[in-house]
Length: 353
Image (tube, rainbow, N blue to C red):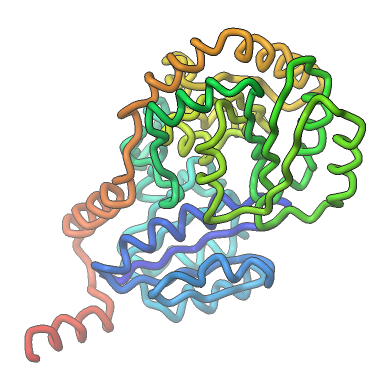
């Protein structure tokens, strides 16, 4: 199968789509002919350095189209929220199967398949929906926080918190969260995790915490080491999205502040109902006030965090990429149509060593 993945990421829009596409490609490249077309800024190209499959970089939608036309894909997989309509129409004309890994995509109704981490996704006429946490794809560096380790985290006198507001954090929510946490009277150790795309002034973050002798704040630029750090914490303050799914896989309770309503809508609501993470609402001064009260409550009632950690166990596994790939393979077999010229040639070659 010739499988092409088109994704987009930036410091403004975030990096989650890039990370998910990369994780999926790491699995798919062992079984199929895979190519990624990544629409991004030059400084983000290093995110794909570990892949063995072909990776093409484009600065805009028009530049991406040439790669989409050149590859002759049988399956075209989208992981982005928007794509120029004309480019999209040209791109979907050739593949036998089109699908989306993103739960939000403006052309979703024109696709064959949509994969989403929520089981409550709205239905679309003519589109097959595969929904639920079994299809969640996230950072392969995320690992479960063992119970005894989490117990040690909870037993520390200082309340240890990880703040991670996305790889780009264009609105600098990290700064606002730190400023709000400074109002808490209990002793905190705060890891402020700054992603690959964080481009704001570090001095602002330093100035925010300089006047507080009660709290200790560590600024960390992270990628692979992110979950080694978060595994030392008792609570995460997150922006929702893939990192929240990773936190559930790891067993880290979280408070989630969402930038936009669509981000909240695509969050798996049953996770809030199960009590493994907290819905902090849309990002605002009011939600920051609520976050402060929630953090203070959880610090004073750490047994609630222990219960949340235990409830996370087994809710998410790391086989989402495999399941998505299996569904794509099965659906492609059902669809009549031409094999790409390159796939046909490859099959003949494999039969005649």
